[in-house]
Amino acid sequence: MTATTIDTAHTTDDPAPADSGDTPKDLGSPVAAQAAFLPPTQLVIDENVRKTFDLDDHPEVTASIRQRGVEIPIIAHRESDGTITVVDGQIRALIAIELKVGKVPVWITPAPQADAAEREIRRTSQQISVNDHRIALTDGDRAAGMTRMFDFGASLTRISAEIGQRREQVKLAVAVGRSKTARDAIDAHQLDFEQAAVLAVYENVEDTDAVARLLAAPRSMFAYHVRRIVVERDESRDRFRESLLYATQGFGVHSTDPHADDRFLAAECLCTSDGTEISVAQIHATPMLWTVYCQPTDVEVLIDPDTGHVVDSDSIDPTTKGQPNAIAAEGLRHADSVERGYLWAPEYYLRTDRLDESGFRQASDVAEPAADDAHIGTDAQPDPAGTAHPDIEARRRAAAEQAAAARAAAEAVRAQEAAARHRRDELNKQGQAALEARREFLTRFLSRKTAPPQTVWPFVAQSLTEKPDLLLGPDADRIAHGLLGLKGGASALLTSIESAKAQRCQTIILALVLGAYEVRTTKHAWQYTDGLVTHYLHFLANHGHALTPIEQAAAGDVDPNTIDIDS
Image (cartoon, rainbow, N blue to C red; front, side, top):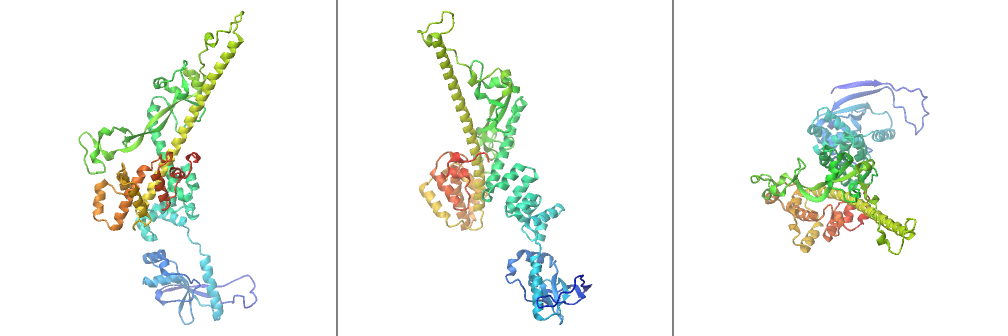
């Protein structure tokens, strides 16, 4: 055995305390210390203050020692008979013995020259102090460390092996380590690693709005708020694409809805000088006076995901749906090369400061034709001086007031319709976000290794009994395949069933039923009452899915008019 001896002198400027039963006794000076590598089997595991531990409770320590050996020296005393007694590092020593580690680092000091009771007091005090004052790494610190290793060239696989964590966990940790906000959220137990990794992505692209919203979101609703942000960002990207055509024609374009901005006047609230409705051709004749806000409509179409262009359904070969290896008929395209989307339409707005220049008028300002005197009344005669009879003037004023009131009422109706349309659009966005978050939950729910819980089968049996044709809904099978993570459609599912175990078959049955319910639970489900949707959402709530406000409205639990559309 090779040992390094370090002599340290005990010095103090304070007077020695008076000797008493409660005062630590002078254990002598100088102290000879040794740093040595010893077989762990030569160490004596003495009485330890830590009473509640099990080697199986420390898998990370075990993995580290198996991979790298004991790196932190064990603190021990050398007894007068030469025995080396462990003071701190009991768990490391026991794991090393279990793993048959050859040698471990040990820091050895002479045992105190004191009676047995004093030694027990000293040893216990040291063990408590060492464990209490040890500053453990936080999860955020570990994530930052793994990120640093990755940045210096260590692969995820290597980090996984050296740190003793699964590769998937390391991947999340590396993402989290790049964001101080995400690390702080981990250390505060505000978010888990998967959620913090999402937060880190938005912070790293400096999307401060998304970061603030996610930090404020309840943990159980985190996925929903992520989907809301994704839906908004996707819509903004699509709006930009749809707006490009109008921008090239000379129109100004809006990135946010200007319906409540008094700097702009909606085309539907304007008319020509003679009171007729403005045509699209008239708007396009002077694009520099107008702005455009593109909005998705409720008209569902097929879209090329690469270009964003609408695809004619007649150009699709329907026999290729769900068949990735199928070749479309000549002149047609594969059914899986398109995706469902919604048609976009422009809303035109005139700049308020260009109203006079445009030659148009606000519909509410256009005067009604003056009432003919003959229609006002034949009994009223004009004044000999040529002025109108007071009765005629009164009737004209009354007619003008009635016309103005009618225009004001029409304007109020248009404003209410615009506000209702805006609210409907915002709630549909929440519905789409809830749909996507819900399907993420279902995908995780169906990916478990064990069979579905027994509590799902009464729901399945009741569903198929009350509605035998439930599984025949359009796209029910396609949604089920997506929830199961399958590509290749029904043929791929049938192939997987051939070798599937019983619990996997149970999962497939459940997925088919859930897919059928998902067909009915669209982003518009909050607008109507459907008993099946209510039954379905309550089932999900009882199995771990936190219903969002828009889902609660679809389930009939809340009034959709009470849902906040601005937060």
